[in-house]
Image (tube, rainbow, N blue to C red; front, side, top):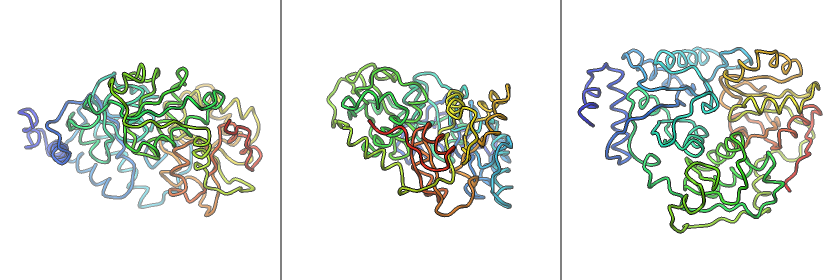
Length: 415
C-alpha cells in the first residue's frame, strides 16, 4: 500500500473504510497484483440479498462510518421498491433484504437498482479504470465502452468503491486486453445476422467456446446497436467467464482484427457454421415440445426504452393470455409513466418488474414443471436452476405471439 493508503487501513478514516481497505489490499495480495490503482467508479452487485451475512456485512460498513469515494451505482436488489410487481419473499428474509438495500443507500450508492447501468447514464470514459460487478455490466463496460474492470464479486465491489482503489491485475492491464482468439461469423447468413435472435444465440455459443479467453469476433457487417451487444455480452458471460470481447469494426479497441490481436497471430480460430449456430439456439431451450406456456419473461439485462417500443408495437393493443414479465430499471420506468405507457401495457397483461428481476427473487408463481418463454440468453441459462421453470427460447416476436395464444408460437427460425 502507498503512503496515502496505509493510514486508511490503519483506521485514520474510520473503521468502515479501514475494513474496506484491508479487504482490497488482501485481495490484491492473493491475486498477485503489485499495487492498487485509483478507480473512477463502481457498480455494486453485492446489494442483492442471498443471506443474512451480506446484510450484516453492509451494516458493519455503515456502522464504521464508511462512504463510497467514487460514483457507485447499484445492481438489482431482491425487492421491487417501485411497487410494480409482487415479490413473494416472506419474513424474515424480506426484512433483511430491505435492510440490505437501505445499508447500501446509507453508504452513498446511487439508487439505480439496474443490471444495465450503462443505459442509465453510468458510462465511464474509454480507458478509465473502474470496479464493476454483475457479469453483463462488466462485459459491456470492458467491451463496448472500453473502460477497464475485472469481474468484481460480492463484496469486493463495495470495498473498492469505498477505498476508490482496485487491485492492478487482469483486464486493468493493457497487455491482458489483447485478443488471442478469432471467432469468425462470416459464414452465417446475412438474414440471421440481422435478426434479434442472432445475438443471444451467438453470445451463448461464444461463451461456451472461449471460456475466459479474450477473443475478437470477425465478420460482423455494421454496428448492431447497443441492445444487440448487450444481449451478446450477457449470454457470453452466462455460459462462459467472459469479461471482455472485441468485435472487429464495432467495439472501440478493435478497429480491425489485426489491431484486436495486437498485430500478432491468433492462438485459435473458430469458424462458426450455421449448424453450430442452430445447435446453440437449440441449447437455449430446456422444455421439450410443450403444448402450453405458463409465463413469459424478458429483460435480462433490463429492457431499454427502445425494447419497450418494440414490445408495444408487437403487442399492438391485444390482451395477453399469459402475462409477460418485463424487467427494467427505474430510469426506464419513469419515462414509461410520463405518458401513460406503463398503465396501458399493464392493462393488456404486461407485468412490469423494476429494481429486480424474476430469476433473482421469487416473483413468478410457484409452479413446479412450469414452462417459461424468453428471448434472453441470460434468462435461458439461469431460469431453470433459479425458478424451477423449464425454458423455451425465441425472439421477442415469438414471446409476444406465444403470450397472446397461451401456447408456443415460433415465427422466426434460424436461417
